[in-house]
Length: 97
Image (cartoon, rainbow, N blue to C red; front, side, top):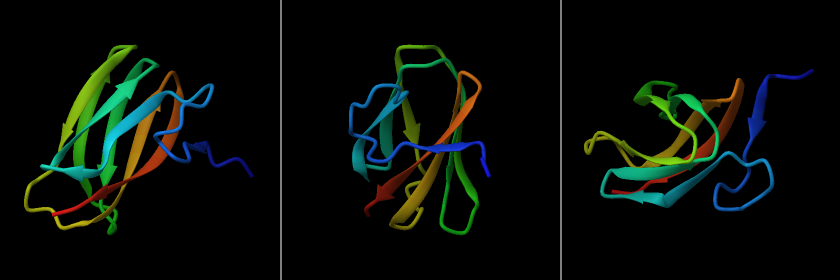
């Protein structure tokens, strides 16, 4: 069964068809940058409880977008969901305090 999600694997790998690169990962100083190859409409970040902790919208193709996280957010693994060119991708981001 196709869930409609596509895993990006290691977000630092430069694999053909990979629409983004995330750095730094682990996150330091409560923000990270996403380098995006596709036309992105939404970037969403969720904590381990499923709560949305960051949302960015409408990022043009070939740009970089800085995503900020609440400095009070705890250390842990966060799920990044990216909607680009009509496809949804997921990746993990680690936040260190």
